[in-house]
Length: 451
Image (tube, rainbow, N blue to C red; front, side, top):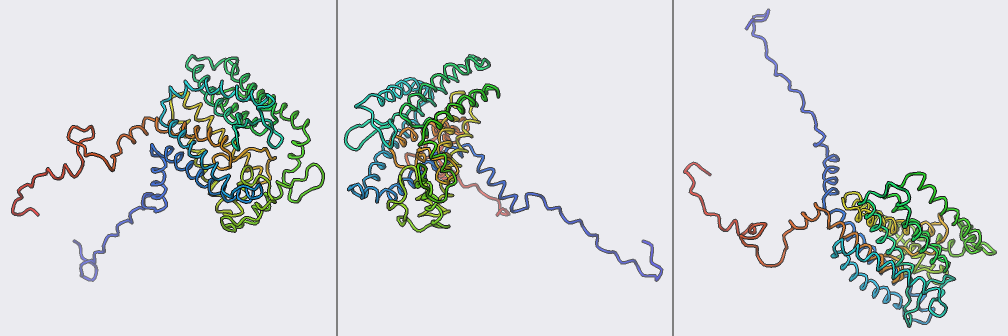
């Protein structure tokens, strides 16, 4: 080594090593995002979202029905828990329907399509017979079952259109007939117009809007071309304008969009305005469960169409956002089931149910917020009404069955070990349990230097 000019050996400096580049995985936020993405992308995510989200909505709806309906029941000289007990009974029956629908094979669902459609059309026709059909709030769409029990057949028409339309479009897709516009429209559109006509004879335009949304959802899933889709939409829009223009009641509801004070005349907007008052007085966390002021006779239909307003008043912004988040999760899970399946019937049925629940929730919440006209449709799984709850819970059972039927979900469910039950022996497909394997391990003699 050559010396320096002073005769001293040169000082060797430590070579600096370049700092290790911080990989994206070392970022805590990136790691959290990766974990959430993996958890969200698991095979059973849709299954848990549908099951958990729907049950939470139903339970919270029962609580709010009990809170919002007490004053109305007392004003009618009924026990304070009258409407809650009826809703709880409907939820129990709906739970049985949900369980049965979630365990039925897809073939049985397809076999039920035509009987449910025929039964719905028959009941909707009975509504128009004097002495059988009943009028509630100006709409002739109810059948009395005796006592205080009534049924609204148009609610079952939604389920019938979903199942029958999904089966019809799936069979035509298997035969490669959906490339022709005639097969795409016939007989789906005429049958839908038959249901819509029977509903509009009773004056229930809100339910007719939901059925129209289901029809458009099925056509969109079938890949209807833009011109065909726009043509059907134009016809439906024209009929809607005519029906609204020819009804003073519907024109009054349309005039109440965005109203903040009651008016005089035909469009008094009393219900819409007091719904806004209820939401505004709730604040961030609400006035407390059961402490609503608007339900004391100021807000009509507080436990049915405007239960979301009472929820905002008693549970505040936090409660309403929780309800919106549950419906958003339910809608996402339905879209995920429809997008990941290879079965055309499952895709059409899951898309139809998701369109039904999402559209009805948007219309109801939009009316309470003053953004849409009051259509008179309940909030799915949440508002009071057994006729609306039973078919909706059956439809949720459909989504659960479809989510369980995915190949990855079936494998994940089969791989889960039961916590209780008899022990699995050596002949089990998954082998013995871990503690049995560890118990049979023999100690191995170690050498003197092995630790």
